[in-house]
Length: 461
Image 1: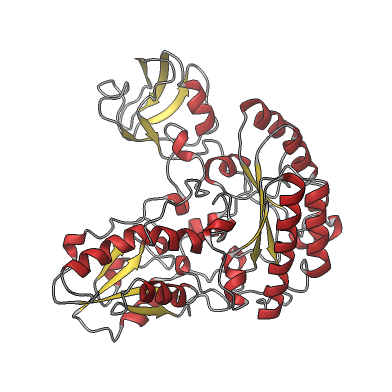
Image 2: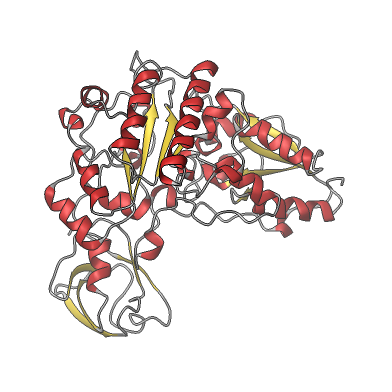
């Protein structure tokens, strides 16, 4: 293990009051060195747990015996999900967004993983090009389900070309084995215009129906193209191309419903917006497992804002169910959200959002008679290209959008663009030229804040 440490201890837990301290390095559990948080969970499941720890400043390691009920959480949080080494991606995909990042961002943003453990824990996508027979045995034996797999195309030669990895031509054999073993799998296709769309996309969807019918969902996602791409073949979809993808998705939605009694193929909300069409309503989705891919995200927000029940499965990964697993990456805490008491009287209210969400929010607010609430559209100049989602707003672009906002305006910012209080460009909320209030990125939370504003008479009903 590589310096895995205890990050917190829950009060009144079995570990509380023992000789375990925050900052202790975890050496072994019951005589074994776990390689990840999944093994950790299995090792601490019994009645007696023996920990070997190393404390800074102590020359010798110390042993702690903890008694508890079978299955009871130990009460420790660990600072890493993988204890040995994250299995990094050895593909060089033509569409990979990490290769399109500008220099100078946080180092962690440039790390590409292709680790099935992070797929299980956090919903990260794996191409299976580094998957092995040993991995397959472990997934099946431990029932590590669901997993999230990047298909992109089922044409072996084209897949190897897109991934720039010869194993791309053969690694989908593992997908067949996973499905045969009853592992639940969600898949994605990053659709690149002129490369894996059109006839190639139809071939992929035909193979999904015939070769991989057990797939729970498959998301068609448009390629993100920033100004920093070095790939001449990468470009944004035209409105007509986006519409063609939608038509294919809807064709296979009907087919999978007819053949399997369930819908498995979805086009992302972004395709509908690029095509100039309204994203699908909530009734078209059987789950929100692919919400991170923009599948049903607009519908969920609209339904939540209107006060309707939203489907529970939000595609959030399963780290919550693994005792001790940390919330990392885009699962990490955002920043403390706004309290309604923070809204001062006598102020106008404005919402900051990306270019895609702005017209949707404007229509939503008008329909619910919040027409006095202003929308401030943040143009993404930091990444450029077709990057227009709220989650990729940066501090620099928000600084520009806030430059001329009156000091009497209360500005609300969705927390989706923050991780532990920082934007992707490393700036924090404190670096903005105008104070902002952070709101959790759900319709219900936004509505709650606006209702409070309305009761103060700041927004006319």
